[in-house]
Length: 294
Image (tube, rainbow, N blue to C red; front, side, top):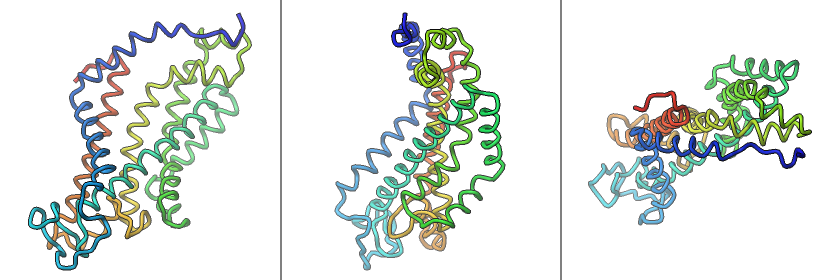
């Protein structure tokens, strides 16, 4: 049998996958979180097409209109812009940054963790000490320091958040790969002449996907929060482009006179982050049969 024809008997994993889906469906908070995430995504990406106003339309005569008091369903801001339209467009930006930063962070963290866990020795030690060194810096201060050095924008925000979010993923993957590299199927693949890359990506990575999926879900929530922090402090997405973070920044001086300007984006951030955390908890429980279903 050649290395090209050596494969794991994947049929033994099918019942486990079916069991994981059944356990996830029984996790009520996770299912509720998934429903909220789906609803937010649909509303933010398709809702603006149904509104008579866009997020930049200024109605001077309706400045600070409260919710449900005019044609603007959720009221208007200090310039007379429709809050519902801005929430939807801000959601596009915040959710888009969350998913994009998560994808980049997972890719970097998985790559570093696999190399460190598989090779071990000097290479693994050097990579993990690099991870430990970066983790010594508080994330928000590191992110603000980097944001102050680059021009604010959507791409720079995604890259900065990803650059400060991959280290925990690398630690998780390194521990998983280190525990799997001496399993019988990995040893058998190497004995049949499989390359290191093939063993890592075809044999070890699929068996380490459970914690990576959980980390990916939680990283989206983390990225949304980080974008909100940085935009709130004025270093992130810049007006007139709306994001939930810079909407909060603009609303802070109107907390007493127009509280809905802060409440609405705050509720959106809370819903999104809490829902992703619930889904992450559900995935963790579903992918580990030993965990008790809530």
